[in-house]
View 1 (cartoon, rainbow, N blue to C red):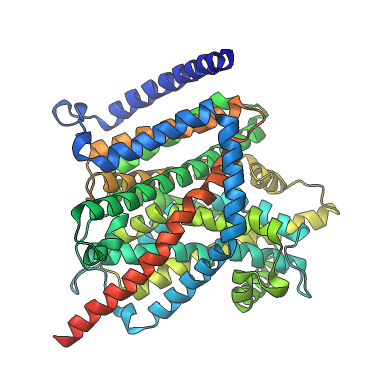
View 2: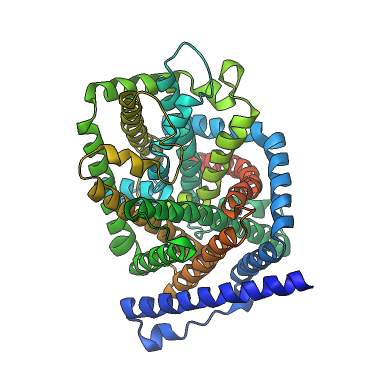
Length: 549
């Protein structure tokens, strides 16, 4: 009883902090976008007619409350279940990833690849640069800054596999594997399937649209409503958990960068302040829409990212970087299938797979619903072949060159020092320590922090936009009240996770969220198999009907 009262008192204290920040957040948000009273100030939601919205919100609220009052018990359950899933379904994750890549390659070079998402006369809404910028910012974003130096260095000094190939090449090859074709294949397969039903069959922007042909197997409206609703709720929850984990990691890295620059620990209030800044910017962006908000910030991200890449590349050993890129990419392609299935000499062991590959695959799957749907939303008028090649190849090759440039440069820095003393071990500060070896370090580190914020803004505004489409009856342009609601919900949920992570020193709740992704992404990955089978069936039937006319 006393423990519960202490928890309640702490909860009320934190709630007051959250309320204060949210008051400021809402105040400045309303001032910035200048809501018109008669149109926006009274944003009423008819929850009785929107089961998807209130059930999703109810589950999230319940989980937040349960996680706080039963933190240790919840953490232990998450740990137990995630270990069970990794042991029982780890191989399934690997096979699913390989299958998605091979299926997309086959689809791209088949006659089906000529099919356009939309009518034959539909043209792409965005230029190819804007299109690639948006899909890359939404799908990868801040992660390439988080792991740019730390992951290649870790792989070099803790090689997952051992053969005659140079440890540097193995390090980059494995980094390519975890950030390359498989990750983007999860996004691309979802984007193509949802885009096909949206623009060819004129279905709503909902995950359940990919399962619309289930109607042929059950005539009961009640059963259909239950099945479709469950699929959409699962997609919403998977998206929220995946996004919150990424935002938590990103804001922690920004805090690490600020600590490195100013030698001051900003604490939990600093992290929350960063989060609120990101949330306000994301809401302003998503309020302005895809063209005026998301596209502009995404394009800015790509320009700054290319600028940072060139800054490091041109000051490094250019020939060495290019040779390492070609060599690592060659081995990645050569070893792709055994790497993907972790067979024989390419099996790094259960411990490594658990900590790295299974987690990465679960993370990409958790982001697949909102990233895939967002890519589908901006891909109308493009052929399936163009989408596959654009989503699978362009971002992957860009990411490979990014990791090669930073990884090879970090290897050279360590060699110049003489021995490695763990300078780049910390995932949150490694890139800032890395830039200490370059001129203009204060400016470059400041620019990196701005880019981190900007990448998180584009990930968050894309997720808000997609979640709003989900709960606003699958509309391609959701109402602003739904965008506002999800901005608030995601902010509150993220703040709650950050507060819990700092309130309980014996438990890292962000790590718990990462483990939770392995749990929440499993049912979605199983659904993905069924979704692919239905898509192939429906596409074939549609093609046969078109050919018979």
